[in-house]
Length: 110
Image (cartoon, rainbow, N blue to C red; front, side, top):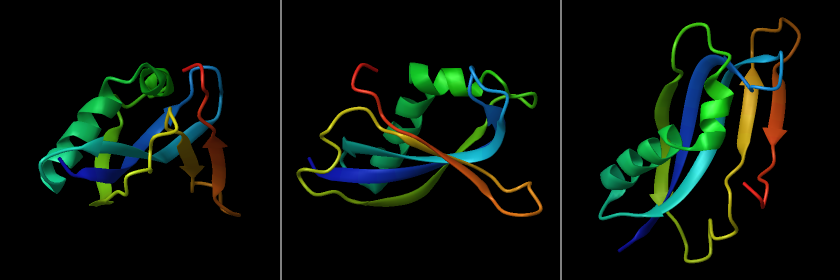
């Protein structure tokens, strides 16, 4: 079965459970095997929705659950995505000066 890299775009507003900062969105990438790109997209969205770490990020949302959109799907090589837990890149573009970006590194214990 072919492997795919699926980049997911999560649109908020939402925040991390332990933070007061509110983010407008985040990007994360999932690597999985599927019959085709559509199957990989659907599986990546479901995987993210069920992920405990993602559930913690959603707790601060005052407008319900954030929207999850598939930003990109591509064929992945054999070694991509084999290192463990995926990370997140959070952003907030509401600042008049510049976008605020935070990168949450994966943790081996997650």
